[in-house]
Length: 252
Ligand code: SF4
Image (tube, rainbow, N blue to C red; front, side):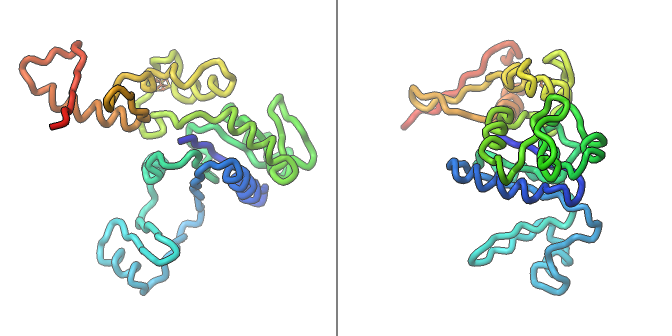
């Protein structure tokens, strides 16, 4: 699952750019999800007095409204991006996060003018888009692409720059095992100085074989599986932490 952020000020063209990106990724056969950050303090999709609202008011911490045409998950508090990405359960090729500036994700900056651009540009931005793309084609070495007139080029660049989501999006401590912090690592991957597998938490340390075939597992699942198994074997007297662990489930 690849995840990137599209951010920028209000009326800079963020949502219009995202609509075009989603359309083009779908045209390429990708499964796409998205997250929209909303800054209004009192935002709530549910109306007071509805049955779902009454569930929440009674204390339910997650209400699922299952309709014939739509299923809505209502959580009466703000969740972290790591928790929200967990809902996508790695079933999507891309997840686009709109309006969240403070995540360690590759970013597309949408700007309305040069002032917006200058004040928000940072080293995680690999592409600029939005209204400013009517005036510029490049800014400080970063391509400026219009989501309406150049959507194919724009999505080509996304496919080239955005890699599978890194484990630290799920709240990993910064270990500096790659020689920098996680943010520095993503900046270097965007410059092609690092690849995802250079992160010590991405290196494949758990393998699951089904027959002779190795199952492809993502880093989140790998970490969970490792911690469950280690939790169990640590309690065994004979366990040496340097030993490799092999588990085989035989067909009866
Ligand atoms: S090795 Fe991975 S988790 Fe550790 S600091 Fe580098 S990027 Fe972050």
